[in-house]
Length: 368
Image (tube, rainbow, N blue to C red):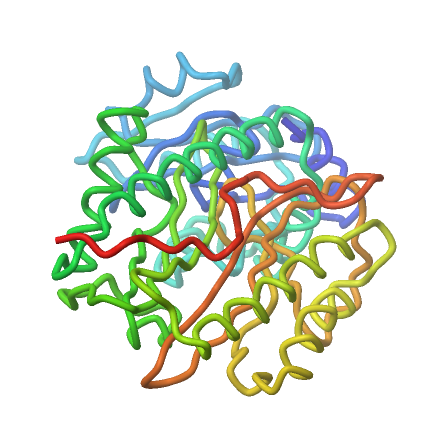
């Protein structure tokens, strides 16, 4: 679970303790996942002592029965969790001077409580970037889970395409997708709110779903994903409901060409910014560069958006085992939007996608 690598990092960086506060990070290192809501959930890792999980008392037995085989300490709602954390830390080690924290997650209030228990300690070191790099390279077991999430996304597209009717709302289609995922596939959590956008609504990339209704001869954009055994999928498809206009066909084909070119170019040795340029140059040459208004892609794993960012200015060299999305888009305000997206993994032979729904323009016949 890579805890040994975190402990080695503590030693190499002259830190005594890592306070891990992000539930997803805790799950990554321990195999135990939970939502603490407003309660305290943490993983304490030491440079030269055994780590422990700290969680609400009502979750202690669940944590002990999980993949985690280390100590678990809990607290009652009537108890002071910070005092108990401090007591357990001092039982582990006398070296409590240098702490590493997740600066992009730990709240100011929780930081102040920790400082109150260890007033002479330093909390200036950030472990977030080390964890980002550690999670960047997926294992075969992780990739298998990402493939499972991708298969669920492919199923969701079929449900969504079948639900399109004249006058049906975007929210109704999204609701059908979520419902059928639950009753047919046992999916209890989407990786983000299912997005369905019809007509000009699709020109706003993250709008919706709304009560807007689908009308004949519009493009309909889907962006969806699931959580499968703790790992996310994220995929987009755009379809035509009725007969697409020449302009609608044109922007679709430009976007499809850009996405396919980027997939074919995603190999070990290319940089993130070079890959972004592969797709962006095609869209720009076709005259739609101003309508491609976001990065080409983002990392994926236990979070739907992870490191790295496939974007201009990022000179990260892509390597085997890195997983990310390739999702160029063209969004013309007041007219239509197109996005085609697949997540996948870089292999020695190229980019292997986790989703496989056909990307030729799908034309859905008008139906009432």
